[in-house]
Length: 330
Image 1 (cartoon, rainbow, N blue to C red):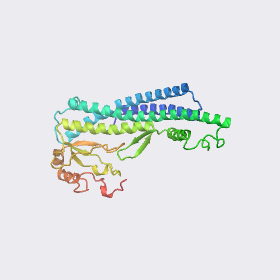
Image 2: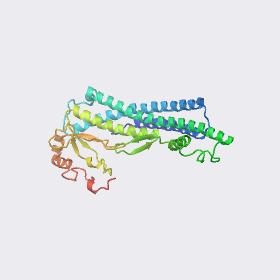
Image 3: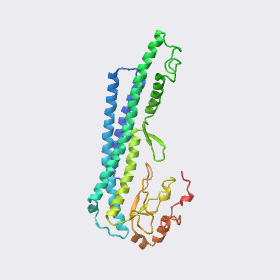
Image 4: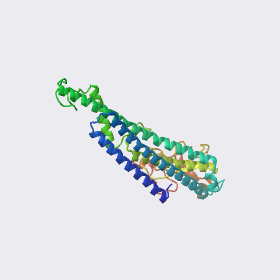
């Protein structure tokens, strides 16, 4: 599935806008790191400016999703109809425009859009929450620091001078705990990667806003492509799909490459499509509609059945396919 040149240019412009907004965030973070302000008025203004940037980010990211996902979905439906016809099968309905306008197809796209926007917004909320924590702890640290300095100046603080790391503030003191949290949050914020996402394997991955948006959109584009093929194949009376081949070294994807699966799970010869791409974030695998009649005409039906059921590692038609057992999977 590929996007048009105009769509790619538009996506590039959206990402460029996100990078500019990230630069604004970075300037606010630098300001927070260097300030000794304690007033509530100042920190309320910083929070307001931070919220305004995030509102703009949400607007850009939402526009990106609303532009890219429908285009990917529509292209995949069109490609599926083309693939079905190429497989010596006449879809019913036969025309792309008839399929794209059906209620199930429209509902699939609507659900995909809602899910994409929810996923995107979840990450943005998490990032904004992290930065708001940074604001709160920095203000509290500045207030505590002012109090400690005052106590030192008046001779009441034991342990000698030096506020950050000084003996007088104690690592276990409330001030020391806040300082530790503030330093950790500041380090995360200055790196720009303050969106924390736990993947399905339990691994925590950190993203900045632009990279997180790219990851979500790329993954959802893959889902849109898959859903478009599935919906249109079923709508046209088909049942079989084939996974693309990249000779991947990814252990999550490799077992599926090039195989044919049954969407309904009722085909007697092909395994059920229990897992379809994307198999993980940023997965590049896609599916295409195929049909038993086409494989039968090509004389590859029995070979595809054997390959898809792991009875052989030799792909029926792709001479460049590397058997999974010969790859150094990561």
